[in-house]
Length: 459
Image 1: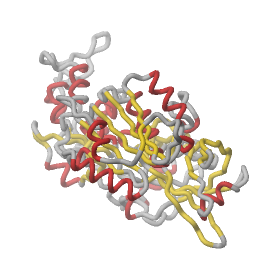
Image 2: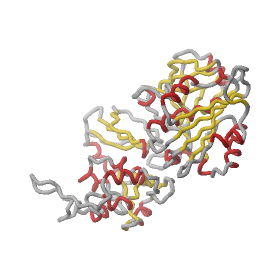
Image 3: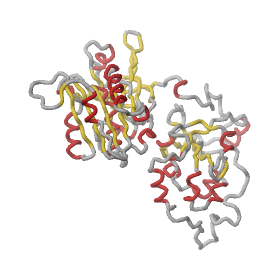
Image 4: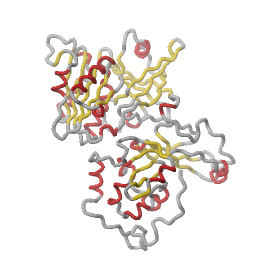
């Protein structure tokens, strides 16, 4: 973390200083249209509050210092950097107080007055990125101070693996910034005489694409038949382990067959299309993988015959999809073929339950036969209950009794499906076999959808 200037905060005479006992703390009178509710409306308006157009960056101390003016104000709180320029006129303590945090790590300043404030929620649309981690050469010199402490609170990135040999209490998770706060208690309350040797890559910032994938040994708890050739495998993570896979991300399933490691990516689904609240998947202790069993498939045929209680290695999560892609989207369209439905399943739930800006969510689901449609009854039930959701099935090998669409994806089919209402912002998500995905994206582009309006999930 950066050094914090040794200044009094709030400043003497500031309206944000705590008043004498028995008196309330004064606040700066905000201009009309600058209440907390107005700020919330602004953050949900789709306006780019970071100036980075949705990109997250790694911020060095030198870069942070450059952004220290009224109209270009960045600050760091607990390792995360925010552009608070747009928040100036909304800050209850006034511009003067907020400017004291300009261009520096303001964690200590923030905690003196605002520790109770949920800044992660209030400033999530202002997130610039993480602070670059700097090695701390003074670590060994602080052994005595470290050893005298009874507990430690640290912040851990969701994308990092942490190995701890003392009891851990997870205090709070912050998905929007990829952070977990954990509290560590010493197993023995004696003074530490040393802190041990740093692990490889300790105190460094390694991008996900450059790091080695870490696998966890999971236990197969159950199998549930979805169709004649598709199952949902429920995997339980090791005791004390948690994995909350973001929507649109995938994990890697690995097992050893005939002395060779076989690895394949799968996108987790929820227990049901719209699962009950606080299910085990939400808590991060279980994973549900929807897997199609191929008779000649090396891995899937092995999984089909794998007994309950067996171990499987799970790595990840990985993927490029981010929630920022959905910012200000009003119409969400999904084109899925076969098990290309799996990334769409949780996306449907997210759109209907959490994203009120999305006025219409539509799925066009391509399969060979009616018996191949995954979660067909749940999709139909959701369609009947939720007016914002529509589903359309397309079969390439239907029976004579089939009354729905027939054939394969084509331009005419998509032209009717992909509507562009006035004042709308659309996103088209595509996933399926390679041939399907390439043709679908080509057809969508021909309908004048830009690259920013197309999201491809690799099937």
